[in-house]
Length: 228
Image 1: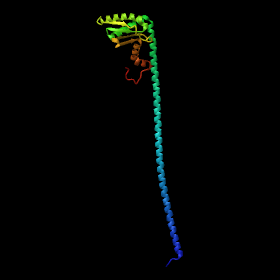
Image 2: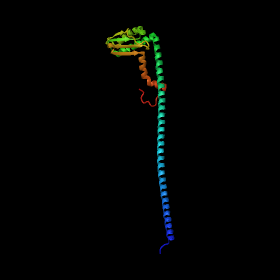
Image 3: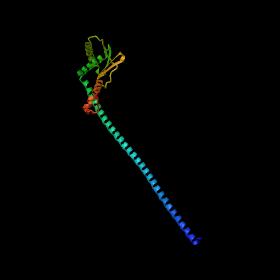
Image 4: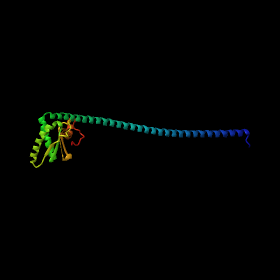
């Protein structure tokens, strides 16, 4: 039997409702899937950015820590250098004090003449040359003349006359007047020279005693392995 128009219309309406329901369900399924994928992607991006931010801050924290260590090391080195400079200044001040006191040695003429004699003899033994020129300060000429005679006599006695010696006082080229005193002996036209001034002797002794002086004035350095 043929369907009436009313029944056809009802079936068509029913089919359209079914199709619409299927379409709505499919749309909801697509929306849910899209929402899920969106949330997953959003979570992935958020986590990715979180990791990047953590890495950035971790790197910055390490940089700050490194800068702190560098700054601390620089400050420590600066403090150490200031301490070392203060120590060296103290030792140099001690040397200058000794030098100023050394200049007073020449005030006692007889004592100073004995020192000059010893310095001349010592220099002659170092040279062992037959012709020697002696230089001194201009203010020491008279004392040096006396000391020369004693020194030559002692030298000849010590060498038992086996060494010839002509010792000449240089009255044209004097040592600087601001040194503490002493003599300088030259031979072979100035090619060989022995400086035996009070200042040079002080510097030599000071260098030899420097480790001992540091221990006395500043205390022994526990990190120092050698004292020479």
